[in-house]
Length: 417
Figure 1 (cartoon, one colour):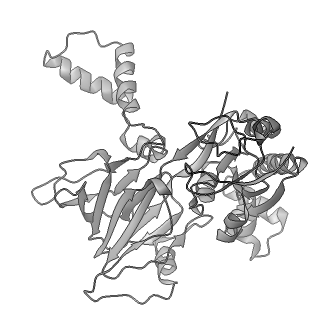
Figure 2 (cartoon, rainbow, N blue to C red):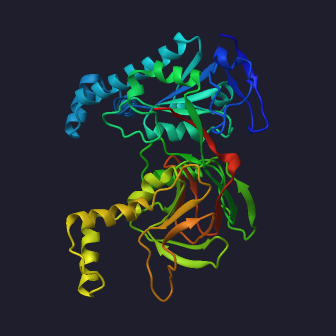
Figure 3 (cartoon, rainbow, N blue to C red):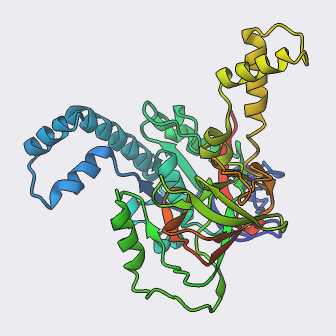
């Protein structure tokens, strides 16, 4: 099989390294969703592995010099099973090894990196990135890939304990060579998942992010982490920015007070509309990818709620239909399905969590689709968290503009089934 080292075309924003099957070798064109004929074979792949709970507990108490027996006893005191954690760790490790060996058997150069060691240099080296873990690992792997033409592929290494919405179907966890051969034969289509970009400006802003992965931070620790970047507190009225932050949100952006029991105070403008003062439990802005995740659970309705609403409607003689379980399920599903949209749609969905409405604070729109959201913080100790893993300080005077740009889309694959 001959090697096509780099292929370029006007339809792609960059380069793709690939080796095509012989039938496609003469075509020398980039594979796009509208051009499904070509195959894809990377020469260098970075495999980003998650930290299992067993590894996390080991690292957490390593500085204390705990032996394995002492770790076992400590976990038992916390109600956790040492043997159970070790078993899940071994399953994850075996599946990672299966993926890595499958790649190497095909002559592909592989670099295995733990999530804490994953950096921009690794992304530049690789022709493609594979996340070996669950959805959280996929989000981390995607967070450092800003090149629209560099594919990111997720493999769920513990499918019995992880949903893996962003990963390949679970059957490929144990049969990864089959997935590779589908890529070679062109039995897939590219899927560009739209992502959110953030412009931060205002007074006293701090552009230093805090990596929340693998950390369990108290409120005090979180505040110290934000200030650890050596940036003195800015109190001048000088407006700084706007700065395009070097992260893209694949799932969602959340803004709110660090202390969950404290109401978040901010001003919001949707699609360049008027600014509204709001107090709530925070603001979530999601992509189509994230519409199945946190945003969905914020907004979905339970059958019990729908049933109670329909009973109220029936009491007012608006509907005479018998309220059986089929009707309740139908209404529930139709409403909940309306919250989900395609990952490739260049629009967002915003949700104000538990808004406070009175004569001072309004909430004319609690949720809805949007192409742009602007937020001005009036918070005390707030964070802007990207995909649950990267946090930025977002206190009084900070302003963020949340939007989308097609250039930020993440390249993933959908295998033909």
